[in-house]
Image 1 (cartoon, one colour):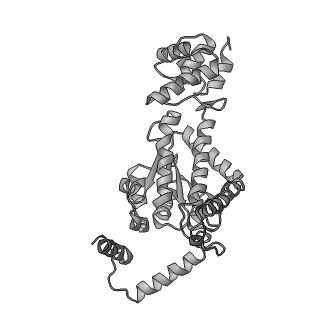
Image 2 (tube, rainbow, N blue to C red; image 1 turned 90 degrees about the horizontal axis):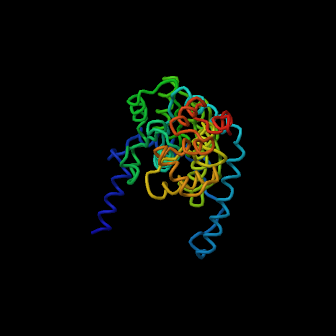
Image 3 (spheres, rainbow, N blue to C red; image 1 turned 120 degrees about the horizontal axis):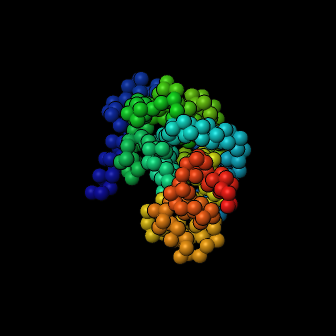
Length: 333
């Protein structure tokens, strides 16, 4: 029974809403087949019968292929740096960073966005992730959702998109309709647009102000773009958000100093951060954090300069939130 049910489900997904293919359907299907055939992300690797290899051989072979991903990303360092600077400029204008994607690409965008508040103390609305199919698609595939080229545009309109915002469209193929439609809407609103794709001359790359097209070659399993393509997307998004936060002063000497202590581990990390930066023992670091109501940067500045937490907060505000600037300006630093 389970097998029959699974087969019925697969048949439904295969046909979608079309039950009797007509000539227009056949024409469209042939066009899509040709379009996919031209994509590097859809290509098959050199002939290797994976099912004939033992597990250690498979692990070794897959790992060898993965090592090419950071090398490919490194070749686009200049354009990634340009994107980071553009994001920082929009943040300073009060803008937001919004990721768009479907399937794996959408999940990676939502993941990056969701980790910014606890890591860097940002408000939840500062970095957002939109995925085709909505929150349900985070846990369950809603594959047909990516074909809706109006959904992302509607979602962006609901967010009240402005020209201070940045919209990053993520698509391994570079042709996902959900992402294409979203980027077009973003351009209409005057928002800065960035494309992250794993094919050159992609549809989203042609729309975007800043295309980041990192080609990682055929996947270990042909067409499974959650693999090397997904890894490349994660590396790029890591840089876009993290380096933008570094430029905004969310770190000091390579250490997170704007983290939000939402659990026991992060509370311990906050104490350790104050200890590492200032050199004081744990009890003094914890006392400084208590006085600063958990604000790591205020606690650090108070310890380093001897001022009260309220004064430390004022000095940080005058320094634009940059701890290094506040320390350098302090008479006793």
